[in-house]
Image (tube, rainbow, N blue to C red; front, side, top):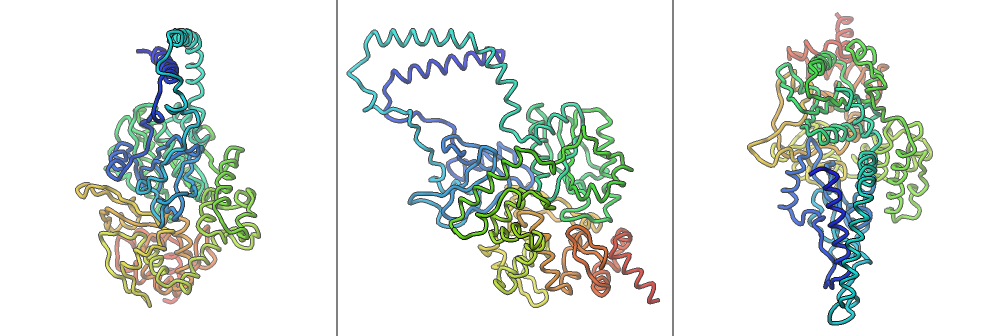
Length: 566
């Protein structure tokens, strides 16, 4: 059946239903299948059908209208007691105050909202009629039935006359509404190109937009979609036909590691080789604006020119983007019950103007700590410095919480199934610290695979590939945004540099520490004594590392100082 006939048939049936509905007496509102999963088993079943990937997981909430429901693959977050999650018209997860006796009485994860069915109760439609209000006698008259039949026939004729025009208008508009403009532009690029670059500041939704472009294009063209860290593109990697690949993580997870040049070069070569085959493969490459700037010459040498026809620049502002940020900001203000809170004085310009972070991240940081509003308004500190101080203050304000933060900094991840108490410096970190309820405000829980026989790996780190120490994991906890890790790392380093340099995960040191005078982006600067402590404890004697980190500023500084002493 053609799309036109399907469209006509649908409208005819809809009209018939509407007419019959008005003629029949009903004892309750008409039920609908448009509902979210009712319990955990239904939720998991639907999640398996949605096939969310990476750190995203299945979510289903009521929409802002309180009637329709929306489903999406997004990252888990923590919902505070007394609130229900909803999806806004723009697709954001927002909180709505819960009113009732069965409202959430403690914080809970957004992907466990099914536990609180009060959050899924739809608003009653005022147009629904009940038996008492609709009855006018024991039966309907012949005249009423005749009128009903005439109404149906006339409706069918009218629908048949306008359906073709209506369908054409729908076809033209359906791909241009309800979709982010950057996602739409990226999909347009993939219609004619085999690769699109998505570039933006940290916190400007590079990963979210890139994944959405890949998913939308794959869905439209009946293709598969795969999310990868660029380090997974080894020479043995086999690309699949009819697949869209989203690839990010270039030069490092938290910041850039200069030692990764060769790895990046090899991965780019593999992508371009596949692109040049002109087979059914598409590539979406997510990249930080700072990385693009720092390695501009390197990318040009490797055939990446970021032409306007193949690049989506997320840092460009637009009216629609500002409206979305303002909507999110207004929601935070409404949710705040403290009249004197500085968040009520925040304006759009405080979020978007002159910041080196994406506005969506800044909004989420304000949601985490409303005191940040004072900093944004007065510009007395950068968000990086403020959040660094926030984590530093936990050392004295809440030592048990700080232990959990410290563990995540040193290890990069908390594995529920592979944990041993850690004794480092003055601290003894136990599982109790890692299950601290307060820690959940800073972290997200990722269940990589539900089946123990199909465990998956986190995105590999550069050092794990060099050393050959990758681990299979199942359920892990990490900071809900890389920016939080960066600030927590800085806080721990400023407090205990002699502990962080020899004990922290290697990739964090290589990405976030530089010698004095050579600091960039989010890095801390360290002196020659701590550089020596790092090199002699972590690098010396490991041949694979010694051969691979030779161009890193920390290693160059150490070897220069060592040579001068000789």
